[in-house]
Each structure stands twice: as structure tokens, then as C-alpha cells.
Length: 111
Length: 280
Ligand code: SF4
Ligand code: SF4
Ligand code: FES
Image (cartoon, rainbow over all chains, first blue to last red; front, top):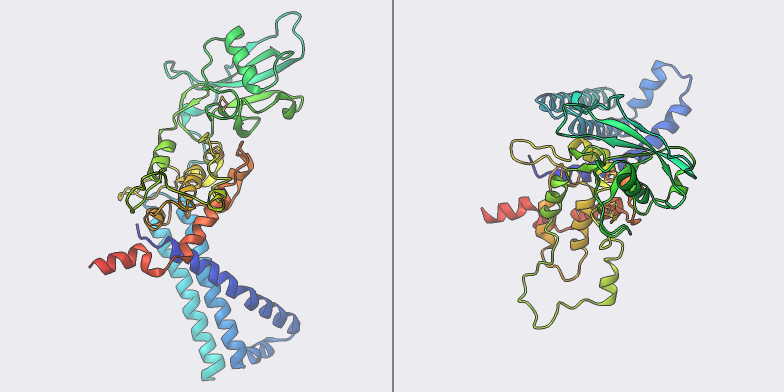
């Protein structure tokens, strides 16, 4: 058992704090773009500031969600299944992060 | 895996006995009491007793009356009968509390159900095995520890520092809080191969904080180290059942939050990792 209880606790709280303004910003942007089409949305992310903030939202959100899910798994699953589920959970978060980082890089920066 | 259903031998059967009120009884109330006898092969049952409550004010008085006048075989712990020993904690009408301070008037007009504290092994009837609960209390080392040489007279403490222990020292270790805590149900005795993976529960953690908050105690950092893993402290998810049921009106959840604050704000050099790295 690792001694990382406090580190996890801090990351969970810090990511929650970061997510609050990011979520507000995203919500505001989505409302502005209600009804706009695919091209408009793509154009919005192509602006590097939006791309960066959107990427940050998904990456921080994915890690925050990973910790939350890991807490639930740790609470309820005590068998050999626990380590497998924790690994899958970690993998899902990592995939989300890689996918969004790659997309934002392509749309906002490389394109 | 979490136990969401009771083990087969713990399910309450329907063979409970009924003891009707004696003729001429006044203010009759029905006590529905959990019964389990380890010497019999039967599953637990719930007996119902119609009790003359004309001279009964607290639930414990009712139980004592049942034991004295109706069914001497009923087993339960009690001692002080005034809320200071912590012996008579049961699950009464669905909430953990002390039978000796719970008045019948507070329980409405219906039946009064009395079960043992939840999720603990039952020794007999309302008596639970609290060995693990006490072991967790021992783990937090509930006594003053200092590195300085012992003073000639006493360890001095200012009235202000003493006041910081109010709301902590009053705990009577009744176990109402820990056995009402879902996190404690799921992980209160969990062990992995390293002997870890056990949530200490609100009662032990309230006492841990009682010594962390004591100005005379000098082992703060070691005490925090003993709580640093993913289970002992951090399984508390601030569900607050503990604070809701505590019959002494203490707030273990708040004490736990204070410990987490101490964990987060202590200098990185004091954490187990850095201490270990420095030693290597
Ligand atoms: S904190 Fe309250 S409920 Fe918990 S053991 Fe102490 S007195 Fe009982
Ligand atoms: S606040 Fe923490 S200790 Fe209290 S009931 Fe909830 S999880 Fe348990
Ligand atoms: S008998 Fe002592 S607390 Fe109830």
C-alpha cells in the first residue's frame, strides 16, 4: 500500500478548484454557440486560447474523474478485481487525455 | 467485495416470540428486540414485548424491565445508565444511540425497535464484539507522548490550549458513530496482505485528533505518519452520519477534516517519504 493518501487528496481538491472557472467558461461558450454548426465549433477550437482552455478542461476533468472513480473502486471492491479495475480506470483517463491533447494540437496549433 | 446482503446465518427469521401485556397494564408500548443465541443453531429473530411503561422513561429502563419481569434471558450491556460509560449503545428505531439517554417520548407513539450496533459481530442478542473497535482506538495511541524530559510537576497547558480539546475529550467510546458510518461498514476491518487497508472510523479518528490538538503532545508528526495511507483516514467521505448520531453531540467528521488539514499543511520534509529518503 502506497503512502499517497494525502497527495491524492490534494490533487483531487486542486483539480476541483481549477475545474470550476473552466466549467463556467465552457458553459458560457456553449451557450453562445448554441445552434451553430460543426464548422463554427471547429473554428472556435481553432482559436488557440479556446483550444488550450478546452484541452485543460478535459485533461484536468479526466484526472479528477479518475481519482473519483478510483475512490469508489477502493471503497467497494476488495477482491483481485480491484487492481484490474483501477488499471482500466487509469487507462480510460489516459486515453481521454491523449485523445484530447492530440485533437487540440491538430485543430488549434498544427492546422 | 462489499457485503450488500447479510450472510445466510445472519438473516432474521420469522420465529420471533410475542409476550403480550399483563392484565391491567397501563401505557403499553411494544418493544421489538433483536435476539440471537450463539448456542442455538437458529438464525436471529425479533421478539416483541408489550411493556407497561407507566414507570418507564428511557429505552434502557424498558429493557431492564423486560429482563427483570418478562424475559431474564435477554442479553445487553449497560452500566452507568446516565450516558457516561458508553455501554448501552444500540440501534434504536433505526438510529444508533444510547438506550439510557433515549427517552420513549422522543420515539413517537409506535413500536420501539432495538437492534445491536450495525455491522459488528453479534455475541448474543444486543451484545456486539467491539474488539476491533478497541484495537483501532489503541492504534492511535490515546495518551500523552512527549520527547522532552518529564517536568518535575505537571505538563502545563494554558486555558486557551485546553479549550481546544473541548468537543474532543468528551467521547465515551460508545461506537455509535463508527458503526453508523458506511465507510466503516465497508472498510472498517479490511486487510490487505501488508496488514493495511483498514479505515479506522470516526471514533478512533476523533481521538487521534484529540491528541494531535493537545499542546502538550510532541509526537504530532509521528501521529500523522501513522494515519498516512489511502485507508486509515482518507476513507472518510464526509457522509456525516457520525455527527448526526453521536449521543454526546460531538462532531467526528469535523475532527477528521482537521486532521486532513494538518496532513495537507505540514511541511513536505515531515512526510514519511521525505523522512525515508533522508534516512537512505
Ligand atoms: S464520538 Fe460520540 S458516537 Fe462516537 S464513540 Fe465518541 S461519544 Fe460515541
Ligand atoms: S463523516 Fe466520515 S466518519 Fe463520519 S460517517 Fe461520514 S464517512 Fe464516516
Ligand atoms: S448505561 Fe452507560 S451510557 Fe448508557
